[in-house]
Amino acid sequence: MRIGLDLGGTKTSGILMNQNGEILARHRVESPRGDYNATLTMLRDMVTHLAGSKGDDIHVGIGIPGSISPATGLVKNANSTWLIGKPLLQDVTQVLGRPVRIANDADCFALSEAVDGAGAGYRTVFGVILGTGVGAGIVSNGALLNGPNAIAGEWGHNPLPWATAGSDPALPCYCGKSGCIETYLSGPGLAKHHAKTSEEIVPADTIALADSPKRKASLMLYASRLARALSHVINILDPDAIVLGGGLSGIHSLYQDVPALWGKYAFSDSVSTPLLRHMHGPDSGVRGAAWLWPA
Image (cartoon, helix red, strand yellow):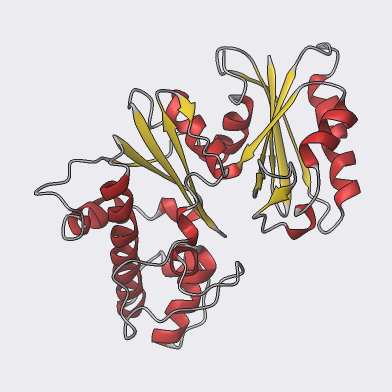
């Protein structure tokens, strides 16, 4: 058996999963924002709760909003900024007294969907999270692609391709640059760009209803941006499937509109890449964290 934890900025979810991918127990708590030591205590308590009397040989996988730097062993690129610069893997392993593996939360999502989700059976899967942030993971032949810099799939912090100043004004990103894909395709990004063009301040899930001409126009522009961004992935990686997750993956029109558009940008006479919606929903992150320990 294995435990998977999804360490989020506001909530942390955990599961106990057996070797067949069946979830035996669940636990969810509020994340202690801004407090690293309290985060370690929370992770310890969650593992204790989920493991129960099952023994000490249960392996633990954790998905985090960032990654462990191969150069330093410290957390980098985390929008939960209190984790940045901390030896999280070392500290959690010591606190738990058992083996731990840590990966980026988008990597965990991609792994979950590739192993036994919407991307099962495809050789190469590009798994995308469209939520409060934008990230991605790459799975090839059932294994995560881990590059020497631990940034494989960090597609959200590339510039939006074929952006125009009129329809795609660049906004600053928390990473220090501007015009990043995340600033256009995240939920807050969609809401900000909609507010600029329509003078209507509403959250992304309201825009997704497309119940007015201005909201429909914002969604079509969103689909265009997503098509352009994914066409770069197709040009470079040419994945066998692309799987969408996160809150904005529930916009059903994307699965028709984006493939209808990306052929204009991909360097190919045709594009047969399937664009798929996740299978495991909110469980993808924790399942993928558990699958960091393969069967």
